[in-house]
Image (cartoon, rainbow, N blue to C red):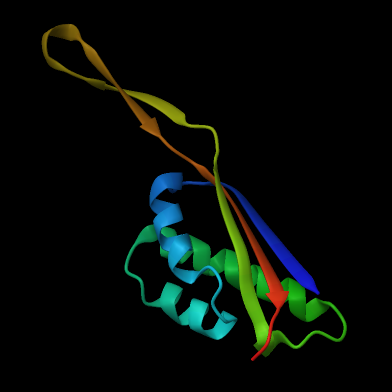
Length: 112
């Protein structure tokens, strides 16, 4: 049995989020949640929320052992970028791209 949660338009860069996601992929849910809870950067907090949401979705399904869930897959795709400009010297302007992410977490029942 699988459970899924999606968070779109999250204000974290996909590249940095993938680094954190790689650390918890394939782990038992309890281990993954502990790693994300104590990782001190913004993508970890966002991923923590999405994993908890997928776990809550799994608990709504009937006959699923929530403690035996495993993080099967975390997909971090690029969302639209917010474009901003910063004034630079001699009347120029520098472009700033504030990147967003679409995060998908899939949990599956595994062996304890």
